[in-house]
Image 1 (spheres, one colour):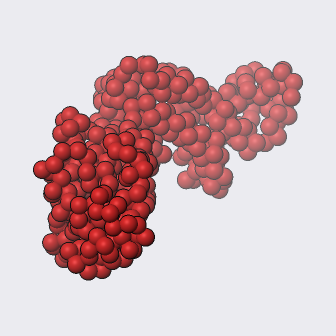
Image 2 (cartoon, rainbow, N blue to C red):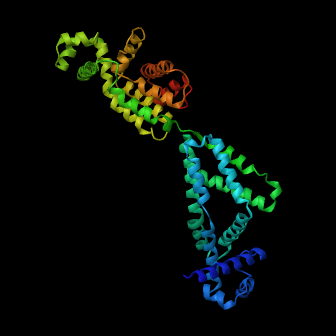
Image 3 (cartoon, rainbow, N blue to C red):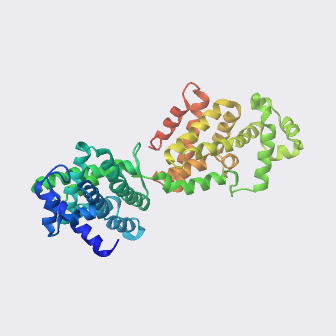
Length: 418
């Protein structure tokens, strides 16, 4: 299409819109004739017909012009700016900055013209035979693109501030709610500008986003927790070959512990693991310790429990982990009971001991740090051991209590929601 023809089309469309604006009709071109439009810009009616064929063609061109006028570039620029870690603002300040900028843009005279025209077009969806088609054009050309850009802006703020939405909201749903709220305020402003103070929309958005956002502990701590889970079988405190040997022997002897550990001798352990009695006696103080170390064979299941919902929420991952400990302890109470006794014994001994052989506490400690439980590393170590010991104690002595209840009770010790 030539430049002169495109210019003529735009002039005719704008003339039609001006007449609709002045006459206030519901239907886009109802009450506006081709002659009216031609007189508005000083051309012949045949010129209007030449470019658009009919009033229906002109009406669709007017709708297309609305779609084309929606400028999303300021939103994209704001997304890049707010997504930068170097901007130096907290989440509420970022929300206020974005919301105030959006409101200031909406109340500009040029934007007010666009909003009035959009409202008239929306009204046509309910009273026109082409209502569904008009709605589809606006949905695809205006709302879908705008909501996509607005959602990207929200996601950028969440990533830079390490935040996420409370359930059940998604960033797209929040974008819809925020847009609807601001649009309603804008409609009131268009009717009575004095009734809406300049920063009301920004205040409303700060309050709304404060209610639906919370720290994304999964993003804050997922790397650390995954590293801790990977290290469950590779701690640095002891000779790795000795550690691997102890775990191998204990796993081989595990079938023996279908009866109490005190009924299993170290000779039985040596025979089951095809190892000399001397070596077993040198490296284990009792068959109870062998039974305790054999719990390490469950680490694969515990890692799977952590990873199941780790990408959703670190509190959920921690709860799943503790629930799995409780479940496994009930399935195999003899070896888990032996582990509980060895953990109690370790309180009075120096060195890593059973906490390295079966490092249940590492994942809990990393999760507590990521969640933001206050204290030093040493204090969090003690807390993590207390949490695990509580889960073991409840699971072994109160089998009627459900695993998820046991996990919730244990997490109350450190004020972690479950």
